[in-house]
Length: 219
Image 1 (cartoon, rainbow, N blue to C red):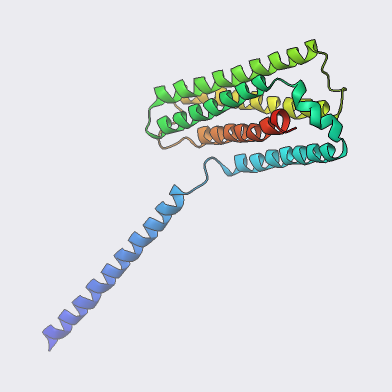
Image 2: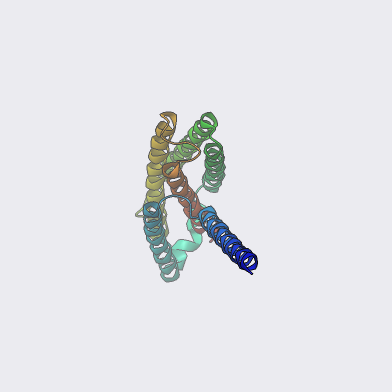
């Protein structure tokens, strides 16, 4: 009888330990699953991005409202602009997004050299965007196009300058994280700052994807 009770207690104890182990495994898998689906970058950068998207969203709404009130200005507006410049900057920014994606893939496997390589190419792409933008504004000036012409051109310059400012901020941010990466601040296990900068850069590209058809294509 004593042996039977001892075996029963041992069986119950083993089952409890097994259940406890299964619970720990399940909890760990939940934590791992949650961490794998965590939004890239820090909470602070997402607050900043949402604020920036709200700002641009307001610009776009006001632009469309003005278009409804002044259809003559907006129907002919895109024909005054350089579609080539707009298309070129679209391709440049899409390429820069690919570069920043490659940089993040490299840092996640601890390849610092490749990370810096792709970050520098991102900065170069940003510089090319600025160069095309300045050429575009020079062309506009040579053709006598200025913000006082009509409501479309005023909106074009306001939105374009605002986005250009964000590109310059993004380039400065990428430059800083590139230096930090070279100094060893970021590695495969610690790169949230780099990820935040990359997320901000993607936001800049996303906004341009809306700006290009809005200003250069839709009559």
